[in-house]
Image 1 (cartoon, one colour):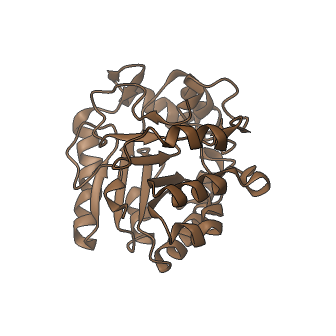
Image 2 (cartoon, helix red, strand yellow):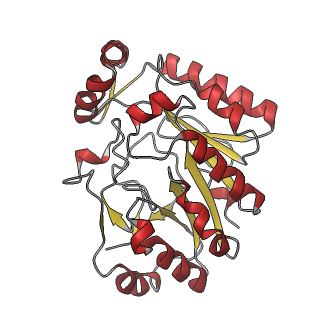
Length: 275
């Protein structure tokens, strides 16, 4: 299936509204060292298109509940470098517009602005992930993704086109990233979703190659096990995310958290912004 119900892990900490998920591509070439998809996707950092995507999607769209949001994408990025050549995500958007599908785009790429013409005609919102404003840190954390400054510019361009936008500050990594610094650069967004780092065995191996000292501290800090991931202590997570929430309130921005088991305003993921 191309369209699936979201939340593959059935996590008790997931507070997402009921929604669908679509991934036009398998794998992601952003190669983020903290990424979780390497735990369940073979060759996760090699991006390839889904076979017969549009034909299969046309058939499956006939069977979905059109009141629910379709999230694109949660196990890849809908705008990998390959998208410039194939335009597969754009074809999906054309289909969504034609079928009046409510959808949310989740991306780290500025390629999304290419499709503003379609997004303006859609029942959609766009979430762009910005983990840090420090480009030297971002280059090591997310080596295949566009620099954070380009992502912020994409958010501005989308906002100027009257497309509802949110920023995902995810993951928050204590001792390495500054979520408040990110927020100060995107005070124009409609919603913020934040989440702390969840340590998984494969991600730890990648992280310690680029940030060995930070990773060693995180090993000592992350002591709460949820499934196959290690979380920061609840008190520490509440403090980190609480500071961010307070600043969002100052700016008049709604706030939500991802897989933290905490209450969110309106929606954790910003999907309430879909028209």
